[in-house]
Image 1 (spheres, rainbow, N blue to C red):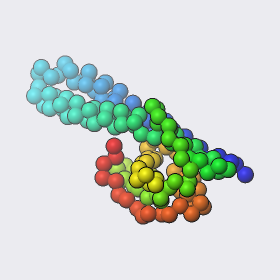
Image 2 (image 1 turned 180 degrees about the vertical axis):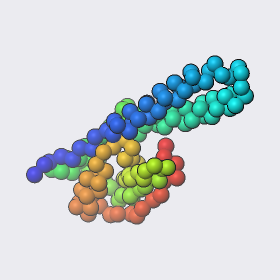
Image 3 (image 1 turned 90 degrees about the vertical axis):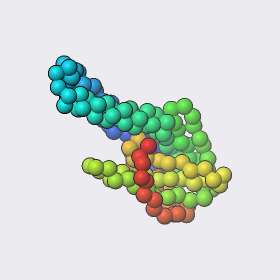
Image 4 (image 1 turned 60 degrees about the vertical axis):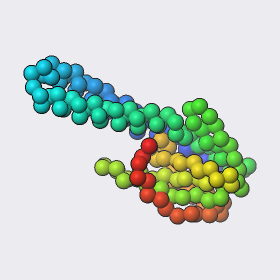
Length: 156
């Protein structure tokens, strides 16, 4: 029996954000020459800058989210890793967990919110992590109370 559960970083989704930013920057260069000639091109460029800004916010927020989780089944330790910090606690420190979802234009994203004894909540997002369901199964197996489902309005 495997003693650890590891939820790895969803690099494909984070890489997709970089790719979209590169495409929009490329489109900006294509429209650059037309800005002087047509007002319509100027409006398109402003729209692209707004979209680019939103993508940058989404990309930057990814680096402040939890990007890796390790669960040791033997010791019941859960380790949440961000790029700049790490939080370790035991399953007994959990008050419960919520199931979350966010409906985007193309896809529905699932997640989990872990609530600890000290009233801190840790949001785990499918955009940044793979295998969220493995963690849900483990929490259910350890009789961590399920607190319900939450709809996430903003995905940042």
